[in-house]
Length: 119
Image 1: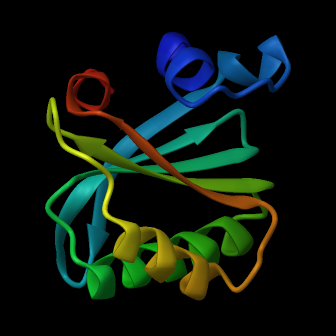
Image 2 (image 1 turned 30 degrees about the vertical axis):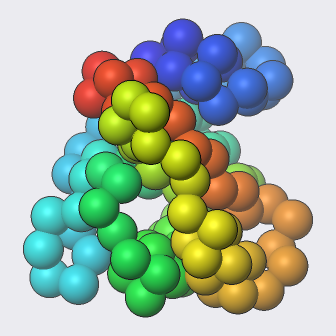
């Protein structure tokens, strides 16, 4: 988990934060959507596969913000796992930006699917 947070996401949080990791399933829209991680009671991470459209990504982002704020966490990161050779979809970047409405503590990441599957 440490390598995913540090290397894949580029997180520079203090080492002590990485000592506590809570991992569980992510359910959005009434169905399984991926993995939900809480790192050090500060950072909320949703990890999902690349098969999301703009509307679903917007709902995931909105759910992440509610989850972050409802649990008193500091930051939210939505990570989309991309298959080898796939490129990020610009429409999804736009959907995320719209859903977070300029929230500086919410970020979208595109990561290799292999790194996401290891979570």
